[in-house]
Amino acid sequence: MQLYNKILLSLLLGVVAGFVANFFEIGWFISVLVAIQPIGTGWIRLITMIVVPLVVASLLVGTVSLGDLRKLGRIGSKTIVYYMCTTAIAVVLGLLISNVLKPGSGVDQATRDSLAADFAGQAEASMTMAAEKPSTVEILLNMIPTNPVQAAAEMDLLALIVFTIIFGAALTLIETPKKEAVVAFFDGVNQTCMVMIDWIMKLAPYAVFALIAAIVAEFGFELLQSLLMYSLVVVLGLLLHATLTYGTILRVLAGLNPITFFKRIRNPQLIAFSTSSSNATLPITMETAEEEVGVSNEVASFVLPLGATINMDGTALYQAVAVMFIAQIYGIDLTIADQLVVVLTATLASVGAAGVPSAGIITLIIVLNSIGLGEFVQGGIALILGVDRILDMIRTSVNVTGDLTASAVIARSEGEALVPRPVDHPVAMSPG
Image (cartoon, rainbow, N blue to C red; front, side):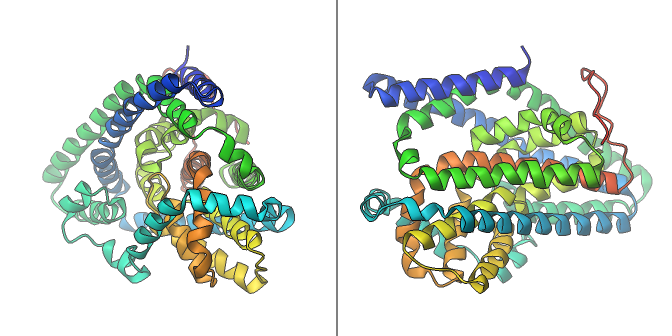
């Protein structure tokens, strides 16, 4: 059985096990499923420990391979512009769907107050974290690390990427024998990381079962039923963005068959869904881009780590729907000007969102404050926290799909053929 099928089967079994335990209120079964969650957490830590050496080694080798620093600047500028544009599209799509379907109009006041009370403590904690979030100027300054080792230790990928690119650019200018020695070392590190990824992925089915079963057993579907319309609107928006936006981009800008492309990137999509973390999925994403999509290491090593840091299309769309839901549930009409502010703020806030579970809640608070809904922040956040983890899993899959789509687009814009590696992959990528 292929790895994808094993992971998918584990995910479905986890959902069923968690649902049975929660629906029938089988206390001992719930306890067992919650108790095995550390298996999944341990697996996430295993895959996460590869992120820093993989990003540094792969990006450094890729930067040196480019040779021409002007090409590096060209790829970088195209990547950032692309990510900003798709994020803005995601926000606009979320607002359009929310204006049409009005997810907040179906929740009565009693349910609203009950949900807000149940999650008031978590909402207050999120507000505290948001208050500590750095300003835009601080985010830009923090991109320049005072200590690269500290940036690596704290998983500050944006700062680490900046340092590695500068280091790689400088490396291209030193004497060839010394340069080749450094590149050979980091190329060895990169290949070693790929071997470790293959080892760790063999444990993925067990980890996925542990993660999903614990989540469903603990939270169940009661909250999802209470916020059904809101959840459906978010999911609908995410599906439309993944299929229509990315599908069109793939066919028009990358010349690829979207269906074939989505089939080839199933593994990172499932891992992203299970872990709710773009950072934890990054090693699998990079391997998939090179082996299944045919993106060169030079492009993948730059576009994908940057995407895991600043490309949050799914999160941005969710924020747009959440803002509209909270405004509607409190009877507040947002003007066109307010919604334009949401587009701008959500797009910019996504740059500072960490690629970790529930990071979108923190940036959502910033967006709410930007349109004068500060007094409704705590109650509004408390309303949606119950279903946030489930929706976070879906939007993270969309984020990772966006990263891989970007890598294909940028690679094609650089003249790459996008031919997957033939070894162990007999099915070729269908052209557009």
